[in-house]
Image 1 (cartoon, rainbow, N blue to C red):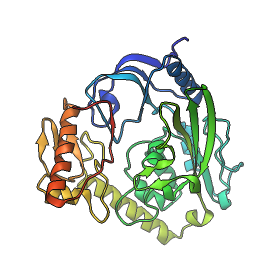
Image 2 (image 1 turned 60 degrees about the vertical axis):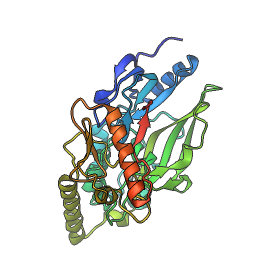
Image 3 (image 1 turned 120 degrees about the vertical axis):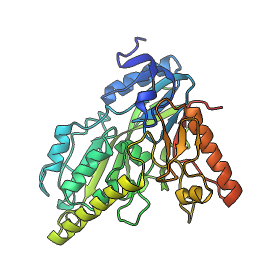
Image 4 (image 1 turned 120 degrees about the horizontal axis):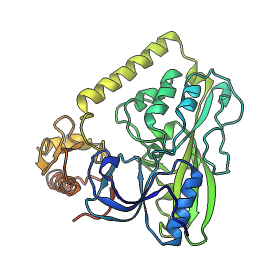
Length: 349
């Protein structure tokens, strides 16, 4: 079988993740359409090559070691900026269509509509940056723009991680705003594809997780979110002048909070650990005296202890070792286990 043109060999992963660490992948691909994605799946299945999902490289620690497989970057599977602007500038009730899943798996993301309860309904390809979703919500004076302000990563990653914020606001995470998710499934045994639409109520939302696909046998099946639908009612959009000013003020507060309380101008992945029930992971780490502690080029942020920042040239093994040190110390001093929010790719010592 001929190797798809989208696949590159011996590709460095350092510049493709937010920590700027990691080694090389044997193969690398960044498809810009579902058709290209299918070709990649068929080729890797034919040659029995393992697939590693990089998505857009946030919330991920990539190993320094060689990745013996194909690393899949979904950044290019995104909605065109002109389509984003069209949604941003639309009027309530404008357009045609119902905004539901196509079911054809083409992932074109062009079935946007604006008549959801005479409100706003649209879909975005999974690789679309969260910032584009923020812009749409902000232009329509939606409360969702408050928690979306400054969130890194892609729309698809936002669903997988049920991305959100810890401060009190509603909505505060993706489960509160997603209407449906379109998923492309590939069976490695039969080489068959299936496109499934999951309504919000069918998604198994959890704290920083969406568990629909976690229990599947990854040796037999692979599932990729290709499109995410959103629906906002007319009531959510039609705000009084006072309400619009209040939302604008809260968005500014959220942006200031991120700039002053989080190390946004550094190499980091966002929150490293999930917050244990009734506790703040950052506060626990700080109380254990770990703020600003370091191993190699990796250090616990002095601004927010649930962030680990990396200097240029840092080894991912240093970050991994610091993660383990933090987990061990918090367990010893607080008798609380810190679960990872960040995902690991490859092997670590």
